[in-house]
Image (cartoon, rainbow, N blue to C red; front, top):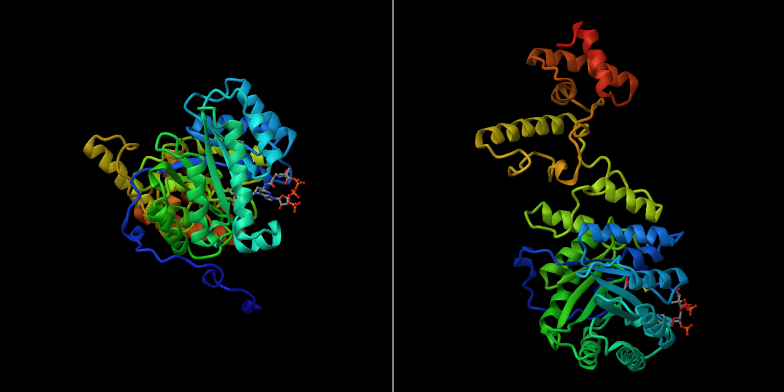
Amino acid sequence: MPSHRYRDVFAKVPVAPVDREWPDRRITTAPLWVPVDLRDGNQALADPMDPERKRRFFELMVAMGYKEIEVGYPSASQTDFDFVRLLATSDLVPPDVTIVVFTPARPELIERTVESIAGMRGQVVIHMYAATAPVWRDVVLRRTRDELASLIYSGAEDILRLAGEQENVRFQFSPEVYNLTEPDYIMELSDQLTKRWDATPQRPVILNLPATVEVATPNVYADQIEYMDKNLPRRDSVILSVHPHNDRGTGIACAELAVLAGAQRVEGCIFGNGERTGNVDIATLALNLHAQGVDPMVDFSAIDRIRETVEYCTRMPIHPRHPYVGELVYTAFSGTHQDAIRKGFAEHHRRAVATGVPASELAWDVPYLPIDPADVGRGYEAVVRVNSQSGKGGIAHVLESSYGVRMSSAEEVEFARHVQRHTDETGREASAVELKGLYEEVFGCSN
Ligand SMILES: CC(=O)SCCNC(=O)CCNC(=O)[C@H](O)C(C)(C)COP(=O)(O)OP(=O)(O)OC[C@H]1O[C@@H](n2cnc3c(N)ncnc32)[C@H](O)[C@@H]1OP(=O)(O)O
Ligand SMILES: CC(C)C(=O)C(=O)O
């Protein structure tokens, strides 16, 4: 492998030293989640969402309780523009939901973006971006630092001129590929933008710091965020936001460490659609909080319905091992896992009876299941499934939970031998019905 062709992040950009505090902190409240499925997710699809899909996805996000939603790139396509117009002219947006529209720093596209939000009654954020990292400056935009800064300030002034008088409008800036941009440059841009946009605690500016392409271990991103948190001018008038992608497969860790490091707002996609390996998965982030006893402030109690809508709108299936939502994530095939789960369930129900606390409210300590599948609307039928990797505990659990069949310890051992022979022969999973048939063959009746 020609690994010598690549350099680590430290060879590409100065990472400012920070007296880091994030490793000692804990997350005790949910950040503000901002789903960008209708923009960053949408732009990565082979077939972008049609109006009906956009609307269905938007309604899903509102129903789940998201309070700020990026709804599109209105200057990109008529579909995007029309969708924002639909939101501006209908009652689809509840009063407590803020709409975000996305634009590059190009005057004609800013104008079109502002046109799209005319008449919007609720809160709106105009989100302007420009790539600030050296390779993008030199190769893509072909501008020096100063020239690019002028382009950004000019975009900021255009936005202010066209929409600054609208009291329901706030401003956001994203230095694209923040994680590869010099910190002093971001500091300078941020200082100028918060000054020009007149950021105040009442009308804060959102500074969104994207890991547009993941390039380093998550601790480096956390340091980069904590540095901004500690050094940004007008910090109390800035909402510090992050936007991790998942190129190294560590988008979740980047987002979590960034929140520890001071990020107040997290952009991502539900189940992680997005450019290349995706945006950070804000469903996993939310349910990670839930699993630590922190209210995620969004509702995943019917996760399969959410999955169906997301799959329909993106036309992409969700992997069976996807955290919290995958078909197999609450299922054990292997014997010792099944045995532990079975004992864990029994103990859980014993404690429920002993304490009088309903099983659905009782503290959860069932081995191998980080959360109770019922919290996300899953049943228990699929928790234990049987194949040649299974053992007597799991087999007994399936028979008991599906048919109320209880075996003695000796019967469990004997029956497991028969099942093992059967699954070894077939090489497949044995369903509950098959197990019942086998049981009747072996013991001659169903008790
Ligand atoms: C990290 C992100 O996710 S960024 C968002 C990416 N999303 C999308 O691109 C989806 C929607 N985009 C589009 O529909 C189109 O790209 C449009 C309508 C915005 C622009 O289309 P076109 O005018 O045809 O330009 P094109 O797509 O080739 O973009 C490249 C031009 O934009 C310029 N540009 C790129 N980013 C920015 C920016 N943030 N601000 C200002 N100019 C920019 C480039 O320098 C280039 O200009 P040049 O042609 O003078 O060299
Ligand atoms: C411009 C920002 C928000 C973005 O989409 C990215 O950098 O990935």
